[in-house]
Amino acid sequence: MKRVIIAVIDSMGIGAMPDCKEYGDIPECNTLKNVCRVNNGLNLPVMESLGLGNLCELQGVKPVENQLGITAVLKEESKGKDTTTGHWEIAGLVSEKKFETFPNGFPKELIDEFVKQTNCGGVLANIPASGTVIIEQLNDEHHKTKYPIVYTSADSVFQIAVDTDLIPLETLYDWCKTARKILDEMGYFVARVIARPYKIIDGKPTRISADRRDYSMVPPKDTILNTVKKLGASVVGIGKIEDIFAKSGITHAVHTSSNKEGLELTLKAIKNELELDKIAYPDTNITNNDIGIIFTNLVDTDMLYGHRNDYKGYGKAIEEIDTYLDKIIKSLTDDDMLIITADHGCDPTVPGTDHTREKVPVLIYKKGIKPYNFGEMTGFKFITAAIAFHLL
Image (cartoon, rainbow, N blue to C red):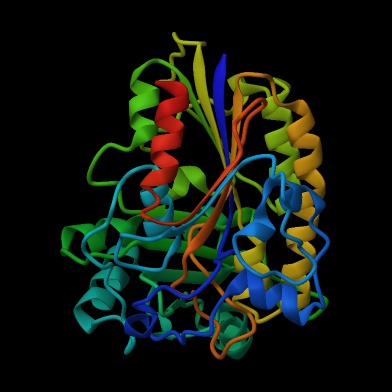
């Protein structure tokens, strides 16, 4: 069985795109390089052996003469610097139109329609904000009014936060689905509606990552995932992959509460120890066992550390991933291909808490592969082509 295992280290960019200023970013943004620098070097022996240090000067990650895989730095063709845009392009879909953002909050007509259709009574905030900050600021008012906290960021997101001890989780999900429907029907080009559940833990509002859900736009065209699914093969999404693609092109999906869980599930999937029947979509009918895709998003780097300017946590998260890569590579069969990449940047060392418009690294490994460093290339289609070449 030929398989491609894709691991996206969310937001691990490797240098500013030439047009970064158009997205409000500075040329100095370089998530991976800066995280290595401020941590006085990272310990990444597996990624180092694959050739990561040959792509950029990275403190603690040496260049190697005999790298074990294929490497490149990829410039994004799509317009944007968000998760949806990055993942879609990895799967072969270039977004020529930028998703809409709302630096002054959402229009009154949109909010009024949301309140009307959800019967939630009203909303709090309706401004761009840091999620951790806004729930702390408005938690008391949220409990007093029971209104959801609706906010956005520099990205194209409609985020809804509630204390699920006050508003049931299923109600939050229903409100998000309603928001997704309204946005689409009213013609707003918004990438994601995000459910942001939280609880009061030790007296502090704390987001519950495991219950987060993203409601993305349905990709306007088929991706490599759809191609593989239509051939009757499995496409297993681990983490928020099914949300990013709005289930399009996916046959099996499981959400995760941490990178550690995502990495362990990926390892199980590679070893054929994942109970696929329990996470299969109802209409899934696998007739082709010759090929398959395992697609994992590792979100902690972005959600827990990048957006919170926590460069120490970011560095430790990358090191944790590297320890699992050793186990993953040892579990690969001769017909497996491993692709390690990112979707955008979120440099925790530069001003701001939003994503950064960056190039991404890609490391490709397969037993017996001829090592080569392609240097800088245009388009994440490099990854799409590698998937297609291996499977089709």
